Structure formats: C-alpha cells, structure tokens
Image (cartoon, rainbow, N blue to C red):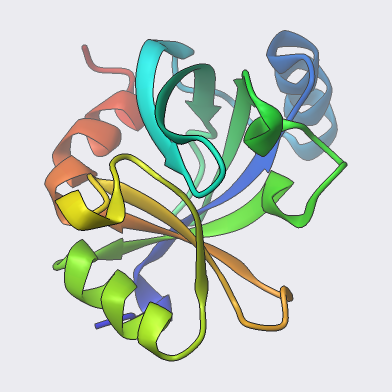
Length: 154
C-alpha cells in the first residue's frame, strides 16, 4: 500500500549531470553518492513499448529524503519540458499491486522498468489523473542496492 512516509527521494531530470551536481551541491550544501550509469536500461513507455535508454544518476548523501539527479536519453528524461522531469520516489512492497490499484483509480503509467503485463519491473512512474503529481513506485527489492549506493559502497 502506498505510504508517503516511505518517500525516500525527490527526483529531478537534468541536462548536464556534472554541472547540476556541482551547482546544487555548492548551493544546497549537498554531497553526492558516486554517479552510476545504466546503459542499456530496459524501459517501457506507452508510446514506445519496451525499449532501452541510457541513464546516469546520483543521490545526495543527505537524507532521509534524498535529492536524485538523473540525466538520460529519450523524451521521458528531458528536463524542464514536462512534469515527469520531477517526481517523488516511494518504496512499495508489491509494485504490481500498487500500480494496478492506482491505475484502477485513474492514474496513468508513464514509464516503467518493464511492460505492465510483466508487472512493471522494479520501478513504475505513475501520474495522478489531473497530471498534478508524478510518483515513482520503487520496489523494496531495490532498497538494499540503492541504500548501499547512497552510502558509497560498491
């Protein structure tokens, strides 16, 4: 079940990850986890189906609500041009069930780690019916990996 208390990041798409890290780090007094590149990264969108994108990302080490900076290929990761350039990431135990519940309530899946028929993968970006809020549902399966990444562990 969705629980805002389980929010762990605010994500922002950026055009230049290194520049964003430098500026936001200095201006917001943040230190960064190592940058990770995912290439290729399986990605599903309604208009393109399952395809691959390249993504580079980092998280602020400060938390518990971390700032995530993401630079990626494809229109979904275009900064500033669309509401999905900013989102809140929330851990969920059963991602397919939670995504299904929200879709049934009128929310729209904008992107995911896999096709809906395959359970969306480990991440699912889902938008409120009026477009006002984008949530990234993140499977708790990824929690140990992302927590280690934020701590700077391999």
